[in-house]
Length: 332
Ligand code: ASN
Ligand code: ZN
Ligand code: CA
Image (cartoon, rainbow, N blue to C red; front, side, top):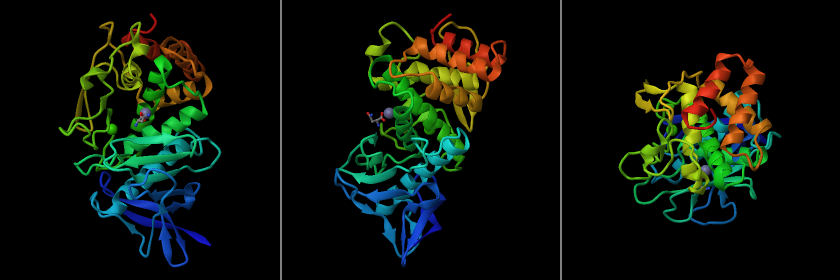
């Protein structure tokens, strides 16, 4: 018999959080029975299999420092729970495949591994420890980003190359950001930056910026012919920029203490409709309009169709979708 328990996670990035755990005999495990039974395992620097399910005599996990082997597990378990809750409570999707089945997470993959990844074949999430600076890749926007690759694979199936690959990556950045805002954690407040907590560049800068993607030194701000030849983490830039413009509008803005300044390709202003509507439009487009070969032009058509269905073609929301695509040089 496994009872649903509420454990305490002393995470590295999100402070002290409640974790869904189970009590099996006299041992607690990182088994979130209230969320499909999502489990978190310790690979202990291996790179295959499931490793060992986290278990212990008390229901307290980690101490906030990466030097404690439970800390990364606490962050990963929390990120999976918030991602589950976001999709279920906001988008009405229970589990990555929408069937109530949980994925599982593995931490401490390999040695000094500076990445995290979703794998469809195991239906599992894996996190590296990062290199040198004791910053495992277990921040909540990374967790939401990676698990969203599973949602995309189960729905639109956007091919991971060319323009569809950029849209696939942007979808992960969009919902990684959505999960971060949803979690509303005081230690990791919502922002339109990706990976700001994991310090992968070693200088405190994030991996990506949604308001002006070119700030990362590689991403495109706007669509142009040949965009699909970029790495998918750079061709995602215009769609991330579209999402920012649609949510918050163009120009300068401070949100949760972070300053943004989003330009438009055509120099015309965009008035945002708020993140919740932008998320809903992108989610419905992903799940009902996009296919494996959707490119930027088709993403515009798909999101406009969704906006028309949800709000009508004469609505301010519809016009904002038009303006935001024009803002990244897609359509007219
Ligand atoms: N962390 C990377 C990503 O999700 C892994 C990859 O290259 N697919 O984009
Ligand atoms: Zn990705
Ligand atoms: Ca972020």
